[in-house]
Image 1 (cartoon, rainbow, N blue to C red):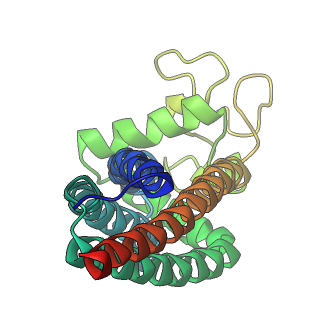
Image 2: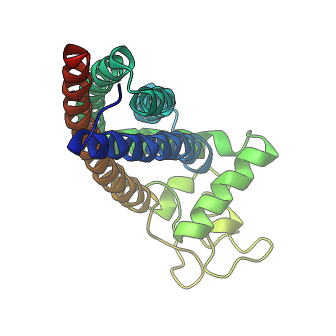
Length: 240
């Protein structure tokens, strides 16, 4: 005997929320992959702690993806055991998300240091780096209109003359435009990349926090509807 009346509405609401969870899980996987690529390819940040947040996002996304499918089946079939398991698993996911949020907050506080160390390593590795690596560094400087870590003088060891920078530091990029022009503000960006990279990452972290809050709200609503449906299914069993 299936649920009737208001419980049938709850059943469809739970099914709908699980479909939203499924989409959220897919979104978390995509966001986690994009953040990981941004940190390690675009910005070349090597600090191991920086990988924590995106890996947790991907992991939670995969778990939510499958739990949502499980919840949809439980709601549609009105299976008490499946709906109960769904509610327990979502509760565990929320606990993991809280732990990830704390880890993300801690990482946010040390973001400036991580960016500083990573960009410094980037400059030291530029001369002997692969073509792909140098191309990534050049793209970073051209996109953010910056040069070096804190200023163009960070490239002092780039050439023997101590007054040259990569061409990607130039205001107007042309071949050999960075030779002997390190301190020339008309030709070379004097501002370093540290502040620009940190601002970009903090902005994206804020969007991730907003997305996490929205998903957490949906998860809590899902638990509420799951508990209501469990009660309705159990009442149906008692009537039988």
